[in-house]
Image (cartoon, rainbow, N blue to C red; front, side, top):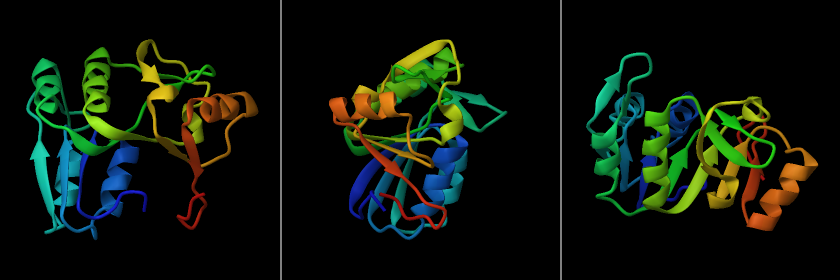
Length: 173
């Protein structure tokens, strides 16, 4: 719902970004740039969506394209929104992942967007991963399923990162 018609979006890898793609099926006049083959395949059903797919090394495990070629591809765009997922979020608000190649691509994605949306559930909080992607301070809005711990919520407020907690019926606030 936070993504309007008539816009451009970059989406990275992950099952949560794939869920967002399903919610874009009725959007009109959107362009989606992605390195996620599952996102692209989902959006094929939307005739109002132009799809741009990055090149790169294909990870068969999740249909993701990664590598230098993928990062360079994203450098050709300046989009309205980035929709990214992560593997872990440190209590200090650091965004973390397990795959350095994927991290490089996600950094390129964030750099090319006017607004950055993080989509991930509470299971990522306090989880550990070795590769630093960035910080919640770089995120415009974080869409999640539960209220944040108070210290992290204060950090987000200080950074101007909006936190949107989705309810079971799909409404958020």
